[in-house]
Amino acid sequence: MKIETERLVIDDLRPDDRENYFWNISHDKEVLKTFVCRYEERLEDFDFTKYFGRDDLFAIREKTSGALIGI
Image (cartoon, rainbow, N blue to C red; front, side, top):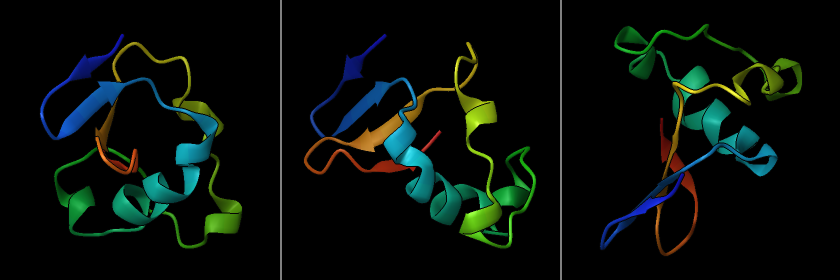
């Protein structure tokens, strides 16, 4: 699935989203107040594979950079 707006793209998670997912979601305690996800302390320990293949998660990206900014 892929949806595009003027500034955003919504599509599936990719392996190269790991670092942005960690910094923007799993390592941000403010975000985790409203998002069901476990806090992760270190990127090296972050298991990103459990998020692939899920029908209920989609990547929200900045269209110009392609960077993951949300789920």
